[in-house]
Image (cartoon, rainbow, N blue to C red):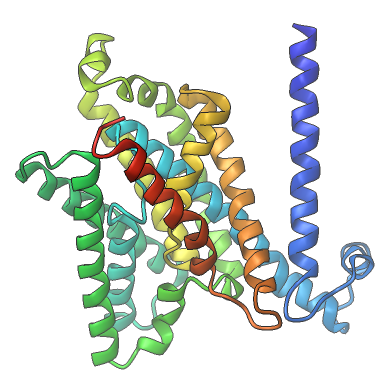
Length: 334
């Protein structure tokens, strides 16, 4: 028992050091490099008149905070979706959830141009629910519609359709420049006020994910097995999807659509900690946060001093992994 406690303490210390290192590197490197000494001084002796201090507190810190949050949210949402549907290809970006958010945000920007950050968050949440609802409703009408490949193809088609309509509307109403942020997922435009507004939704989404994690473990064994354990399957699925909608919606509201995090990280997490979602949910959050933060650092270094879109970096990891999953597992359910 004592050895286990010591091991946990060591793991927590290592994670804390890794997060501190991630924040330090993310804050220091960019189109303008800032020394670690200057970063430290900006915390202990902040000077608004010094440009480096201003960049750190108004741009770099919100950026890394947003990256850590979004990575955690999308990884947890992907893990919940994969466990609930027993679909190893499920993720917010593939199943139309993120595309639904972008679609409704586009409508909001067109017809409600003075919308507050809270309004944008609510619109993004509505869009997440719309995207998920459309994909699963249509899948139920199709033969073998709930199989992994069918759901992935359906989600991709619906997502492309919603994305196309969004861009067509944005071009017609001449707001495409304002909406480019949501289409290209630029983390450098992170709004500190938006981050503050999303915190209550984030707490609710993560708390709900933790509450349903035990049930998702049972669902990952199959609906019949879950029902045999006395679970109300429909209720648990509804609560799980509510958590997915909350976490995906606020992620899109913060930085637009970012793909593949919800696909890759849950698989890596299950490999490391096993099949119990009470462990998968917190570890996926940690790994997802680190993955997106370091992907953001890579995006700044690939073509410095210019920035590579973050979606390109995540796709460099995600596309090969997606093809690997399809090749090794075919259309079989988890």
